[in-house]
Length: 460
Image (cartoon, rainbow, N blue to C red; front, side, top):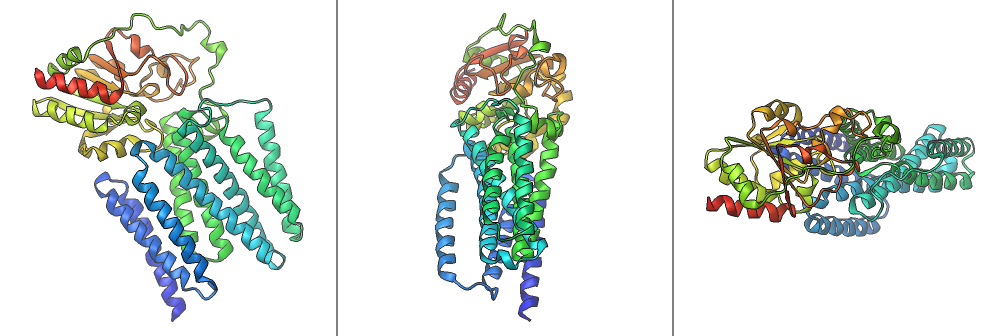
């Protein structure tokens, strides 16, 4: 009877995970989906605690209390602009937990484990350690503690391959002889180093892909831990996270017209000097404007497409742009938002920020849907977006973003770009959009600029 109850609760928990993920596909239902998934996790945790092999509740409850406090505080104090960093560290914590559980089980019962269980333990250790150190470095890149440009070093791919093979070899040694504890620690150390070296050459422009990939790694590590502990709930949860992470990674790669191997080993942001030779890096004919001039341009527009980028997030301009859009709509202007899949620092970053500002979801349009409308649009208002609007992706083979699908901002009748300066985006290259004859630049902080424009629009 007890076994039936436990398995039934795990089935309910897994069902809530799946249903929650399904609801997260729609912004209006995302909160409910998140809540249902959280309830599913709570059920899984409670059921796990009543298993007969749980022998010490004191330390478990202490850990739960500490973790809950950290989670609640972190969720409340971290701004939406820093959500990618938070997600990155969550991925890392998941990997660390899996590596520690695998380590604990090996130290506790390594000699008595079957070959299958030892193999799972070694895989859990490897994937968990890679996920933890890789996610920690990704966090550093996103937060600015670590160089955001691709860091390339001699024999990069060779070193990574040798580390992987050495980890695999030591893992085989442990599987064949569980008493080889030194080999186990070597696997832990090498896989931790590998996680750093895999992420180090990846530039900031690829962070959305890296975040989703590391999310998949954390799920795989959790699934492996589930096999080690023989916990059905953990196996299902880990599998769902791993599978959804891989699917999301594939979507991100498609949005950038690149393969996953190219992301991991192509050092995005490193310009092909031979092909880029002769391309000017200096801007010519850039036109700046005032808030009053932008207000007049918007006042005469029938349709405006707003293109948000990470600059919007960094300046906390989502509420300001939502207010400006509402004023324009009240005056009869049709306002839409063009969302590039990799705009910001993680998948869905712009959607989350605009939802926080109560922007109606039916105003948000994916790239493939909105691109045909730019030619009929009076004004494209770009706020802090750079690489995702760069025409070089279409017409400059020497560009590191060549072939990446972009928003066709340059086809709008008028273009207004709000940006602090002419500094490049994460790809580190010039954006010809800024010197387009239809473009005017408003140089200022995103939020301050939008607030000034809003004030001028109200005065018209």
